[in-house]
Amino acid sequence: MKKLTMFLLAALTLSSAATAQAFKLDVDGNKKKIASSDADIQNAKKNAKAGTWETRGKVYYNAEIAPIGPLYLGMDPTTATLLLGNPSERRTETTAQGEFNVSVYPHFDLYFANNQLMYWKQKTVIAENGLDVAFEAYTKAAELDPKLAPKVKPEILKLVDQYKQKGNNAYGAGDFADAALNFAKAYDFSISPLVAAPDSMSAFNAGYLYTVSQDYELALKYLDQALALGYYGNEGDLYYYRYVAYYTGLKDMEKAEQSLKDGIQKFPANSQLIGELITFYTNTGQDASQMIPMVEEALQRDPDNHVFYFGLGLIYTRLGDFDKAIESFKKASELDSQDFSSAYNVGLTYLSKADAMLPEINSIPVNEQALYNEKMGEFNALYKEAIPFFEKAHALNSTEPITIELLRSIYFRFRDESPEMMANYEKFNAMM
Image (cartoon, rainbow, N blue to C red):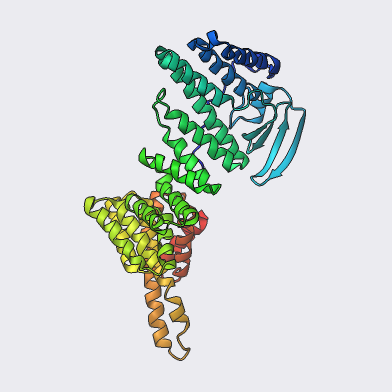
């Protein structure tokens, strides 16, 4: 599961613990206001007034958020107790999302993990679809009195934020279909003419979550909206979700392929896109090397972009052409001498090239010692070629454990060749 870009409401600041009051919900008071608003819009005279609809929007918004009170995702248990009072029950519950410490309150159950509120289950609802009713009311108010448009805009933005929170909450609970619906609502409200501030992140989250919940047509609708707004997710993941929707959902192979190709041209270092396109070409009997011109075309436009060379290295690695992969990673490292990944991948590819020799080496008959020694010499030479690049990567990120382990293993292999090799082995062994 990909990590969702989260929207967290700001934490409520407490002036002091002594002033905190346990949360109380006025259900009857909110219901009375709803009933009064419902009666007002049935009154022809009041129905024609913009103020009636503006008030209705506030009434339904308040009724929607009232049952969750001061809750916010990320709240710690101590703050929850200060704001809400002591729960009636505390228990441990295991769900599909993991193990949680649950605090039970009259109107909601809170699910904590790692000392923070991951999601809640609301048990009391005052206004069904309260945010939708509020949106319709604010829209009607501005329609009746256009001068109110600037005033209702921030109110509609509150509705957008609430739908984001509902989306994040549903995501935490593992209800991806509901999360998708809430993020879709947030986006739809954000493109209202009264707001005109398209929320690209919500569009992306809706598309991603509709993909996860296998509603592929809606997934593409919102992913395409995010794409048009220039929001691509984490390193171009949007293109991967579009690919899944076309390939798995709509069975449109042409558009599935094109989505991966578009993604690789824009994000050539996204190994997931590269891997999926190679798999796609393999499954359809096509030559995966046709991917190379995509990145080379990008290099023609921007020849000093180290990311493009890095992506080219990934492609060559997947195709098993280690020499060209090494050449590409080296070029990437030259263009950006501070890039850990480029230096690291040069070293890693040398090891991959060496390890690819093992089946041949292991198949040499025992009576052909000279040939065995020759091949082992080539094998060891490749391991030694990797050392300066792993050393560079280690210098760029001295706490990365994988690099330390690889250097320790290589120096261990050659520890008896010289005092220097032994000293380096002992250094990295001590680090581990």
